[in-house]
Amino acid sequence: MKKKPIELHPVLNRSEIAKFFRTLWLGKPPKLVGKSAVTGHLTNPATKRKVTMRINEILKIADVIKIGATGDTLSRMDKEDYRGNWEFVSRVYKTKSLERAKEYEVELIKKFKKSYPSQVKNISEAKAGRLTTYNGFYYIYVVFNIDE
Image: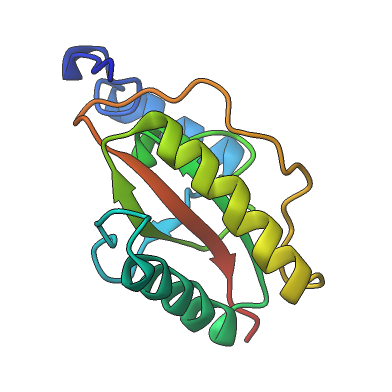
């Protein structure tokens, strides 16, 4: 695991005026909601069951979702493809293993795309690329919109 120093964080070190204009041009980032992420070994069926239950809870209230993996939720939600397009984000699984996060993301995308093809908006089922972490953890997250 390669941890980056917090001094290099692209969002936390942005000026207030830069934050204002970024939000003005790109829209607001998704709001972090939900319980803390599930931890545990994926070889334990209870861990996978808890993650599945968490995603199913989100699917009950969400219009559409997208599942992903990241080393830093704040930086990921700051990207253009999430700002203004998604309302909420929930971290559903947390691990210190980069490979475990990448593999589990693909497994979850395949599983939920098969069960909920109209709600799951993931296009690619490929493993995530580079993931940067500042706190040593990697997360599986779900971004979603609620249709009101």
